[in-house]
Length: 335
View 1 (cartoon, rainbow, N blue to C red):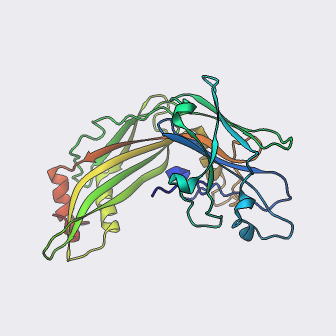
View 2 (tube, rainbow, N blue to C red; view 1 turned 45 degrees about the horizontal axis):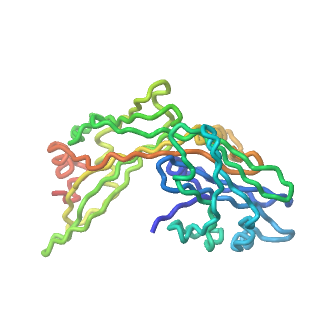
View 3 (cartoon, rainbow, N blue to C red; view 1 turned 180 degrees about the vertical axis):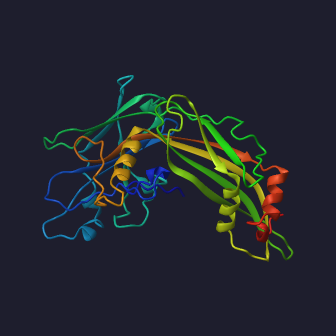
């Protein structure tokens, strides 16, 4: 079952401290709350639209559990307009839980989990397209609009790094490389380490497991003027991460199989959000982070993202020996 969180935005991966939670307690007025992150390669595109609330004398925590207080009625229209082609499509209101996107437990009602959906074919979105979100709430209220540019595809070259990877000497570093179009402004880099584990006693039935090493969640474009980007990681850091992630178990036998390199990127809107957080997170700041929004008549974010995966990277003999015998991981019983 797939899960997606719309209200707490880890920069879809970027910044664990960032959030699109908005203060809901205010004098009553119609305040739409919008979250949309489009990816050109998705088979369908989803927009979350909710509304701020607080009845007189009410408790927002109680009201948040009432679905009718979160969502607009069926009179609301949500559209996407392709600024390159002029094509405009109307999104259908669906229950995300029935689409394979249940809402995670939290302060808000989980059922239903209304989203607005359009399939990729009718939307006709291509890399580099400008996209406009148009929400009509009726009741003579102004349109809610936002614009973003679709990110281009990320390409991962075979030499960034070469497989098998020479994650050997602790003092050396390994460089990760990728190509990204000019609209990609901030990156999330991860290594997904696939290994097997078994009890030492017969029969040795191995169970496939994985560790996800988050290298960085908010790397602003290292090479602002060119498409090739790079990021160097210290070799020793890999073994320290594995040491800190796995318990010492004399009854366990472990085998490292391969590593995936995953790059995700987001557009300028996420950079703007990060800048606001950084400016207001210093020791001399008020620690009160201003609300960020690129929505014309409400709060939220409408942007684009893209990801790429280079799978099945292996380690060379020196790196495997270091995993088995090195000072950080020698007690983890890697074979």
